[in-house]
Length: 221
Image (cartoon, rainbow, N blue to C red):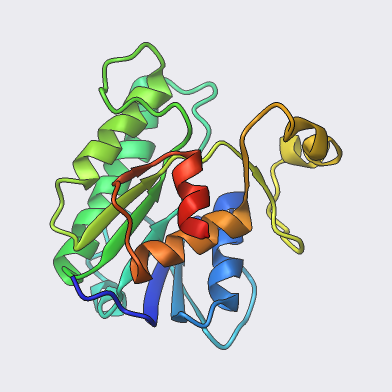
């Protein structure tokens, strides 16, 4: 495929930690010409490259399809913790919603590159004992069957927030002073690396469709 050196991107999950980190990297990058943030509530920041689209549901985009055309990439960073959720409820968010959204974008933008954030230990066999890992693995596999120009499933683990982020999980705020020590024992990425790797997935591509921590770091450069 011909890879664009400058492109227009859709981002979901910008009000969350991963999505905001990716968004900030896109706003800084010369390769990203325009960003459309799609979400259920406003991100609340203005920038010359940034446009927002508020939707009540990711599963029914029939009224806003014209605003979703003409994009080269989607960085799907939206998601929730599975803590306290049963499998049916978690599946509706982490599988059904993701796939419905992706199906719409694939139809509107068949040359699009779709990047999806799952997590370290996601279960691509869909048969393991860990509920969230099975559901995320099922979503990864379904996305790779859609007619996009490219699909990349990112499986990051611990991530260091980008300076200036406002959406940082409480647990991460508690752990921030310990991150230098934790890096000695755990593989860790920065959200700048994650965002840069997503941009490079569009402009350079990668030879794997499921990217573990080492792959993300390598693609980030």
